[in-house]
Image 1 (tube, rainbow, N blue to C red):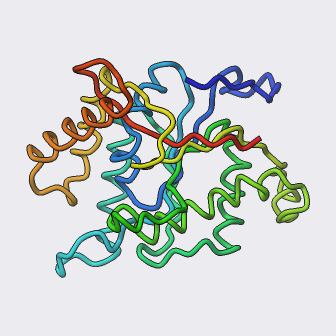
Image 2: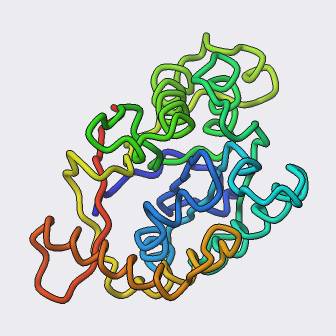
Amino acid sequence: MSQFPNPRSESDDATAGRVRTLVVTAHPDDVDYGAAGAVARWVLEGEDVRYCVVTDGDSGHDDPALSAAELSAVRRAEQRAAARAVGVRDVEFLGRADGSLTPSLDLRRRLTQVLRTHRPHRVVTHSPVRQIDRIRASHPDHLAVGEAVFSAVYPDARNPRAFPELAARGLEPWRVSEIWVMTGRDSNTYVDITDTLEAKRAALRCHASQHPDPESLDADVRRWAAAIARAGRLPDGRYAESFRVVSAD
């Protein structure tokens, strides 16, 4: 596991001396598929982990009886419950429209604000690179968030001349150390989640609007995590999640 320096010295900082991780995803449930096992492990190890979800997932259901506002409320509640299942208490929703994200300057500004507010050492997010051989792994919203997060990490959040209105509000520049990309390819880091697999499964079961067959989901999660562990050459019987870790320094 990566080790980070603690760059803050404020005596009243409740997270002083702890690794701070911010997970930025496009939709509710994205983090639970890609990183909930690692998140649960990091929380158990004493890290401060927080979530930022860019949309409310208001296009993530085909029931015409549900309005977009009703679905948004359902999916926010589900994500908060899923976060609690892995020990995360801080979940921020940016409220952007599901299905229409672009890596715009406006989204970069908003994410820069988030980074300067939470001041994480590690950021976990989507890949900005499309997988043309597995199209369902590259939702346009995921690509947009990945690109906007990378741009917000470098150069925006650390650049004192970027978005000066943020500094005027007291949000000073911040340097993220690493980006952990949730990806099914080009992984260079495997996190053993054997001891937190049940927490991951519990988090995914919180998204009831998305999973009409929770028993099948549980079996799939176990199968996927076992396959990732084999790819990472972990011992037999272990489970894992994989990431592409990118230095931001």
